[in-house]
Amino acid sequence: MRTTPATWTEADAWLTVLCQRGHLHRVRAGSDGTRAVQRARHSRPWTLHHLVLAFDWIEDLVRDVEQRDTEMRR
Figure: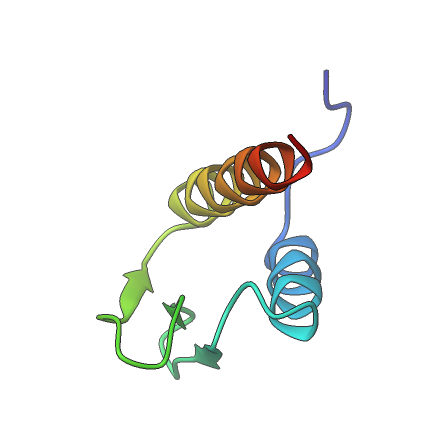
């Protein structure tokens, strides 16, 4: 359980690591505080308008990565 509220700095750190490890193709910060994320080069970009939505999206991506890694080890 969290004891402090989430911040965009924390979300940006997650997005940066996911991008560096090859799980995201692109992350762009918008001038209005949004983030545009793109999983693959030819996939449609998603706009994350709210911090809670950003963390939901990050969680889904991490679960997909974990599931794919688990399947590859079998």
